[in-house]
Image 1: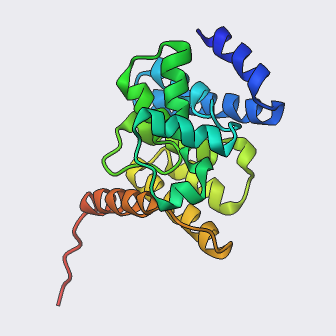
Image 2: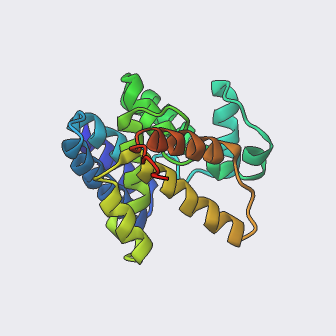
Length: 198
């Protein structure tokens, strides 16, 4: 199936985007091995996470409506936010992917979702921290953290996204905040309680 997907990508997606996709595929596999998650599922989700990235806004909206997806005001104003959900539709309809976990990992790679599985979290992180994203101290720190504490890494990736959106006066989808809060609570709940001595 990989060759079929690659052929489709080279015909429908610009080369720089295909290169990004291949880096995400590799990083998702690396993280999957690290966390003992199914490597093949991670590879499939990584390879297909951006199938709809270059679809025109009207097509994204149309496919989302046909699928019965909820399109809120933020998505209607920024249809590109739907590319993750629509990529999952393309994976299912064009490539016959019927593994719900893989489809969820594709659908949640942009906005995240509270309670995401480890596979979803891995693809979410791989998309944000793959080597082509740059080499800032913040990204280096996130890459290191992604192998130490997956909950903390997802929460901080959301923080990073929120900071960028705030600085550029962009609309923020509530799911990013909900995802951040859920993963932050998960991480904090696992922190050792430090007894204060009086």
